[in-house]
Amino acid sequence: MWIYEKKLQYPVKVSTCNPTLAKYLVEQYGGADGELAAALRYLNQRYTIPDKVIGLLTDIGTEEFAHLEMIATMIYKLTKDATPQQLKEAGLGEHYVQHDSALFYNNSAGVPFSATYFQAKGDPIADLYEDIAAEEKARATYQWIIDMSDDPDLNDSLRYLREREIVHSQRFREAVEILKDERDRQKFF
Amino acid sequence: MDQQREMFTPMKSYVPFRGLFDPCPPIGKKYYSTPPNLYLGFQPPNLEQFTPQEALRKGTLWKVFYDYYDNPYRRGGDSGHG
Image (cartoon, rainbow over all chains, first blue to last red; front, top):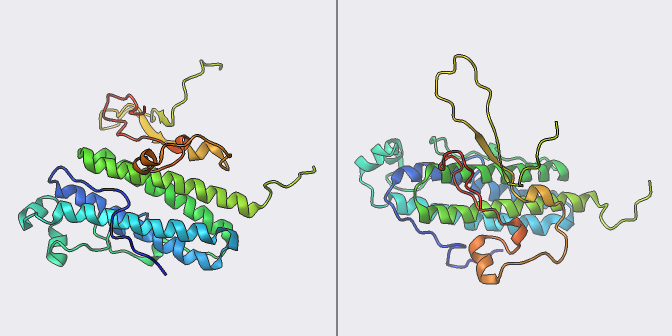
């Protein structure tokens, strides 16, 4: 069960009308290393992982939905007042034909979201290593979007999201250490 | 092989190999980020914290994990880290 707080995890402000950025941002919405894939991956892996790290997957999986909502807000703000012509110029003509300015779970190249973007191997180490890799890939994606964006307010929110990827990666790395279970144990060699 | 110790930066760089017939002008350095989570291992106790207000803005409570990012290609090859 979840409790919803009707506010964003971090404020989203967009200062320039630039629908092309929406096309890039959608990579984090319905892309392979995006927030939807992350949330579904972690919340699904929870059931078959040792008890000690279930809570971590719940917490991070839940936070990914909060990030998804921030990305959705960014995309919505960047496209809501765009004319079909402006969307076409932003490379979103095909999107308009299918969806008007509705959001859709696809990546920046228009490929629809797929459950094959993530795995559940059932092996705790394999799954956590995938989670660490996913966080680093999402961090890199945020960097590339920041590199492409000239919007200082949007970049501020993106930097926040990138920082969260760093913290999540750290916690997954610690989860691996917990499962190795050699911490605090007297070692004899 | 003993070079001078360089100042630590999480923004690493390398110069890609350049062939004789590469069609485009060289980009110079290629950059990649190595954020602090790669260096710390299991988080030790009693690390320095931001104030709660600062932490909410920065995205982490812990000063060691904070890593500001900016486009490293914007400033003539100088990394945008501070």
